[in-house]
Image 1 (tube, rainbow, N blue to C red):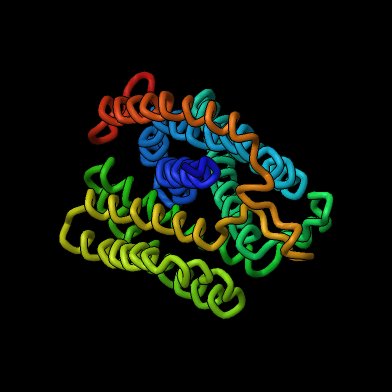
Image 2: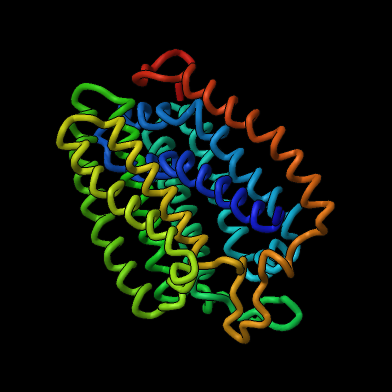
Length: 338
């Protein structure tokens, strides 16, 4: 039993879980400025109000698991992405603060300020997530000492920014489908138009990103030569994307949301396939790349961590399922609403 490969897979599961769950939260924030009045903005915030903090547990768990099992990759990633990660942290904090502070004062300028803060924080966080993924696929200037040898400008390259825009488009689409499930009446009809618009934008950026990736980074497909069964994920990804407009057209928003979630999961899997067995690819010398073997903790540590994962993961899944069941249905504004 190769514990290193098992943990690579578990880290992928945690990352996919976070992207699916907090993805629609961030998508709702990106769409927030496009509603017409204060009541509708409150409905958007309350659609994610009981869920967003629980969804971020997946990100915290991913970070903790990466630190425990792949500490060298964790340290190198933070040395390379230190400033972007601090900006990401500020964005995630500001998103929560915006939701909590918005309704404290019933002044138009006050609420508008926090509305735009909510949008800016959601957009920035999503963009930074995508930029981090883009740089991970493209590779980073990592030296023999496992330290980042570049600058912030190196991280803001055209390819990584393109992947960042793909993340924004993907989460906006995911969020619009979620909002259709949670709203009703006039707002729901408005959200229906958003679903088509965001899907069109996503498809455009998705196709462009795919072409640019295959042309400029042909090494991302190397693992498909040795593991042809992975092409199944590519087929499932295409089918999931194709089923989104079909489900919307047939008036089956839950199937559209499930297909959107499957699309995110498939993209995370393809991201892992592009990297494996690397965690951080060095553009200076492939020998300096951090893999699941040279950046991992001891086998004993990996085994102990796996025991905790086997016990803890069902708890996280059960908690998530209970929260979503309790807060199912349409959004209703009440005394304690945002």
